[in-house]
Image 1 (cartoon, helix red, strand yellow):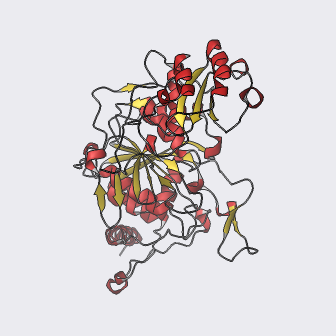
Image 2 (spheres, one colour):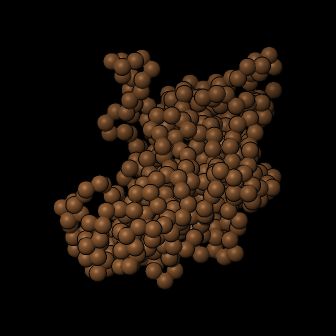
Image 3 (cartoon, one colour):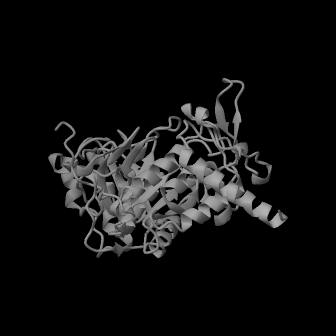
Length: 434
């Protein structure tokens, strides 16, 4: 038998082994340990025996096997095409960005100053992810585009525009989109994308992790699988769920992006939606909240212009605004989110300062420091009435993250975006006692 025939047969056996492994993969708890250097990674290529499938097994396929299996899936028209946009964050960080703190307890992981963010190539990054989470290929034909690789605390309005434009440019090519993002400002990015891409009418699911994919107990693996799962359930992917909005999928919950907030820096269920129910909960199955899904829009109306000169002003009892903030407009600020007490109350001593700033052109939106609530009613109070009289705006409660993003959009597009007009499901009232 010739060496060529033997090599061909070996390749066929490898392909069959990869296909069998992909079909037999169990959803193991936790993530698969992974070396940051692909060249140094020891890969398990064997297919588990029937007896081993009784318990969850962590598997890492070889790069060659993943590449061959990926090629087969790319030509499988029965699976939807999903684009994974990478923006940065903990999910892709190196293991050297964390270390054990022996002074506290053996299993305590603490960040090391200067987290490692390497230049990434789209093809290599895709192979890295599929090598560690091969189940993704069982759900969809996944492709990757690395938009940036930044710590999310460094994200700004111009970065939101880059991500929105990347999604817009590939909208007709893919059935759904997953955005890998850092957790610190994920709610801001989700809010901005929902405001900028009204009528996109395909799932845009933002996810990330509390620990890098390289860690054995990382939540990255499950978050990626959950994100793909909800995407593939959508009608745009051939499923039966009218899910076509910007959402955050994290810790077993699917949340409307512009209603979500990061509430914990340490637990895996880091995000919640204090003023709106979850769109879905992911456990053994997926429990959809069909009544709360945003219906498809009639028209696609993307807007990419933002004015970043916005700040939040949190009302503090007894504060002197002249001392604390002075001439905001004179320093370039063009809009403030004034976080008042309750349904819109604050000390009347702020009115002279607000009047002066408003006369110069500052846009003022009254918000609240409360996480729960529906419509704000500043007209119930003398200070609130005074603010409304000088032209401050108010309305249904929005999260701070959403209010900031919406004001940036409204300042740059005053004729198209109104702060008090709902745009992407960001301000419907919800009766949680019903």
